[in-house]
Amino acid sequence: MRTPPRAVHAVHAAVVVAPAVETAVVAATPVATAVVTMDNKQIGLVLAIILGAIAALVLFSYVVGIFRADIFTDIFSRGDDASAKIEQAVGYTSLGEFPTAVTFAREALASGENFAAQEALDVSLFSQGGKENRIEAIRSVKSNYMKSTRPDYRALQINLLLGYIMAGREKYVYKEVFSGEPFESLKVPGEWYDSVRNLAELSLSNYPTSAAKFRVGLWYVDKIKNAKTAAEKKQYADDLVKVIKEAEEILPVETALREGAGFDYMTEARFHFWVSFLYGEAAAGDLKYLAESDAALQRLVAYYESTLDKNGQRIPLIAARLPDAYITHAKSLYRLKGESAEAQIRADLDALIAIIREKPSVHEGLFISLLRTVATKEGPGKDEYIALAKMHPPFAEFLREYGWTNL
Image (cartoon, rainbow, N blue to C red; front, side, top):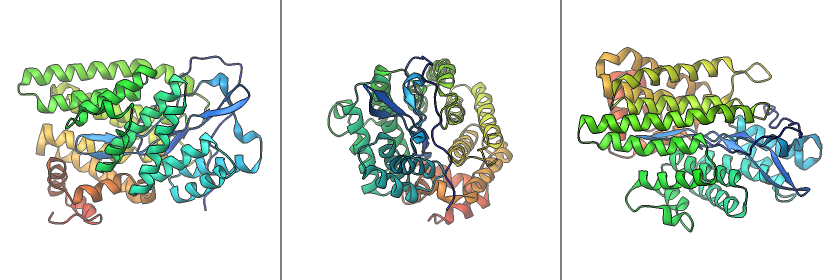
């Protein structure tokens, strides 16, 4: 059994900054935790997750927490048994060892309600996959949203739900998120993108985050794909780029707030991923944006390769982001350039295969689960995978390992 990394660093109580909470994709692995202390009572915690999955045009993301440094305290300095179990739960979740994390989280919760342990449990349950696990995670997050009075924490919970929707492509996930108020009234029958945008706007109405901004960007992705003229496509692409720029304006504040906190490295990793994906989609309206997608992907890869944990090892949380980044980039290249981009497409697919085979357990409940789901369905999303498999036989062999046939 591997020793989990320390999950939370002490934050100096005298530092005063504006409260903020940011999430990016849940496909869920925690990226940040902290205990919120108010009125001498522990009432909250921010645990971010990274959960990656892609389905056709949509992918999920993982969540990144931004904390208010002046109200956080290092729960692990207490040294009691419950704190040790919380640290184990969060640490093993960050390593992608979800069953072990679930065990420690449940043991910690047996000693009493604790937001850190609950979030670690929710993230790990969702990441493992399975209907009962995922519904339990969704209901817990919705309950936390309803109980919280802090705008930033409420935004975090909504962003987690946005991540769950995009990570879990099963119909029951979407149905569960939008059941009951205030969520049910946000659902637009038959309109996935409109519903997701409404949920993102609810998050932004609580507190501005780049994670929610990126989800608004998905609405423009859909508009680009369904535009009837080149001029209309370009207009939507330009509008999407404006959303990316708005998210970029939030990033420096998020980075400053996250500095020195547990899992602060995920802020930048998550950001590069979304920028690469959204610019790749904007390129369908104006090809000049493809270069921005390429550059963001390279920044993400370089960041993964250069960011090491205290043991000098690369970080599984960042690795979990990469399969989505590679497949979305390969798809964009295929749609926009076809066989002329074959060399780069093959390189993306080889990198995807390598990162998953390096440690499959990190991706099992996420990207791998998605591959198995898409294998059983028909439609544009599956057609793109098949086209890429025909272009690159090693990718076809890889897909066969996860239930794909007739390639």
